[in-house]
Length: 373
Image (cartoon, rainbow, N blue to C red):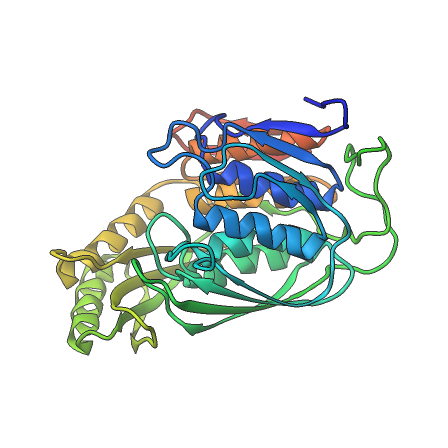
């Protein structure tokens, strides 16, 4: 819905009603030069409105795009965002800047990637906060699973970790270098409109569509078992249990034990399953009262659930791909092991901005297919 200022209004309570709507809307607002108003932000959540990680996303998007912002404060349920032109250079963003937090660095980074990939010049980012925390993709998932697919679409991104950040204190540090897919004056994807009603130009639009229909044969399994400021024997027990569980897959399995630099304490087990057509990753975090063996078994169960299903893209990657297939040139399609509310919500959000249809075949909670023509 457009208001009198040609500002697009997005209902932040739609679908799963979480921070994903905010992140996707901010990214597309910058890419498509479309002012937005987000209402009912995270309505119905235990802590409604913008929380530290969401606020970092808002302010970071404002910084890279010279945006005018209203409502960028903790607890705000209404946000107005009017983007300018994307800047280049070096940027540093700290999730704990406004309030001590182990909020996700990965989610901040994912918000910034679409406009920076489609910008004119390289950008270097440093993001500080939680790198391996609940309810968000850990650093290693981004590096091993998410980025390879985005790079298949034409992106060029270098990602490294300096310090690991665990709940509750955070303190992790990620570094990223982002290179535009293509320079030059080109038209934007079909249907994209700026606030004057014209298709924007002068920004790169070089993402290509992607097709991931069949995962193919499982080739190998590898991963890491990590601890920070805890006995290395915990990581070794996680590794031993993981290798024992994964034997039934009958492929080469290699799990590295790591003592990770961090200001906090934590344990982490991460498995990458490499198939002929795609890589997928599953992880588990340690917690008080949760033994090392259970940490490993938890991630292994997710691997087996995926392996027994028929889709190619895991449920977490599926919803993360939606803005990219919307902005890419040409058709994209992929199968997924599970259609989630997050996926459906992200499709809805994209369709508020762009005159296109992303078809989701299948029912929520079941295997399915996503097609953008």
